[in-house]
Image 1: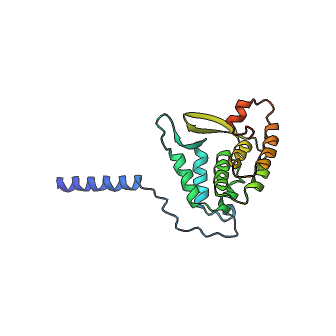
Image 2 (image 1 turned 45 degrees about the vertical axis):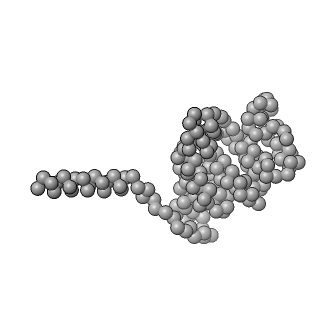
Image 3 (image 1 turned 180 degrees about the horizontal axis):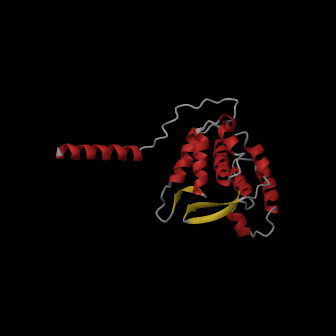
Amino acid sequence: MKKTGVILFVLLTIGISYFLLTDRRGKHDAVIETEISPEKSGKVIPADFLADQLAEYGMLYGAAVGINGARTKAYEKFEELKKIAKDSDLIRLMKRKDPIVKASAFSILAERGSKEMMPIFEENINDKTVFKIFGGCIISRTYVNAYLLACMKYRIDKKIFEKYRKTVVAMYPKMNDWELMELGLASL
């Protein structure tokens, strides 16, 4: 009887451990796009779920952070968002207020060379919301409009970039050249 109790205890412990350590969300094989927005339908879309998780981290994480160049869970969530999100998901995420969500969604759109990049930037050109970025060993602060423009820097014509750069820089008259360089807004 004692052996049976021990075996049952071990099996129960293994089962509970498996349940707690396994990702219970499951894999989303396909997301059917509908005309109904996720907000109205009440459905949770994987891109929205990942965006919520990114927002909870409170800052944007680079690929390698800290003295040992560790890859963070936050960056893994960003990479997962990049894999599963359609451009329509990312465009919808740009409507959110959270600067981490906006920065993440826009950087993916910019990396993909989305044709929606410029109109979205123009919609957000006045967004001076501050957020933090953790890259390497440095945590710095930036602004949504400056970050979005920096994402486009090498993806748009130099003259267009310079026009937008001057507009954004004019919003921060007290910044010195070093601060502008740190934001990726030094002139080309």
